Amino acid sequence: MRLALADDLAAAAARFGEVRARLEDRYRVELTDHPTAGPSLRHYLLLTECPELVAGLGVSDVELFWSRYYWLARFAREWQAVAGEDAGLEQMVFQLLEHMDGALDPLPEVDAAVERDAVLPPPG
Image (cartoon, rainbow, N blue to C red):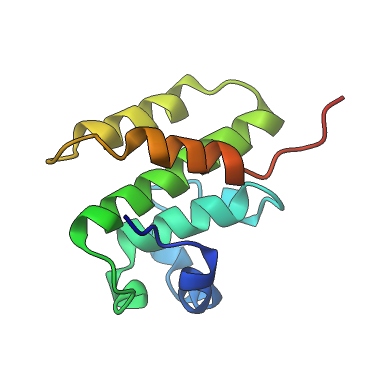
């Protein structure tokens, strides 16, 4: 299974400013400016809310779902590493899984990718 990663989303991310205002009613878009967690949230929002910017990625619907999950779970991991526990954010990640129509077989692989790729502050 292929996930849409940062290199795949670079062109869309460069155009995020074009869609930012329309997302402010439903999301805390200002968090996309955070130096470590921001890019993960931005990628999740692009994949979830901006099909016109991510068209042509060459991912299937299942890969799109798991890419969305990857970026949201990664954002949750990164954000909570700097801001502390956030039950609402954890619930949002879980609720995304509830909307999966297919098998959850890729979950361990995607969760491992989140842990591997998350940008975390140095310990201490």
